[in-house]
Amino acid sequence: MINLNDPNIMSAKDAAQIWGRNDTYVRTSLRQNPDKWPEGSWRKFGKQLVVTTEGMEAVTGEKDPRTK
Image 1 (tube, rainbow, N blue to C red):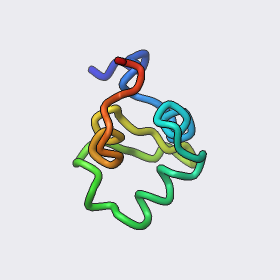
Image 2: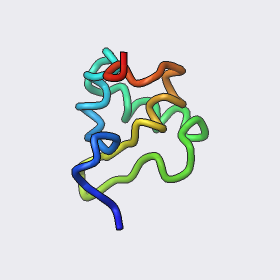
Image 3: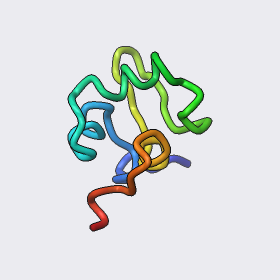
Image 4: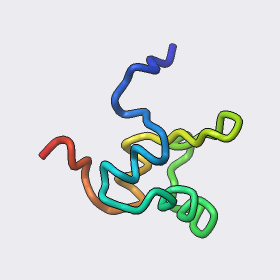
């Protein structure tokens, strides 16, 4: 079962803000470099894009800023 309250699952906009990127960072990254995203690290629900901490760490090369 997936826990949707897990802080490691977030909207693309929230993830971009946490990592200090612009609001369209995730969508642009997925369009330009989909192979950088680990399998299962993102999913689209209707128009809402949801990503994981693992995916953001892989794409940005930076650990989760919330853990510092």
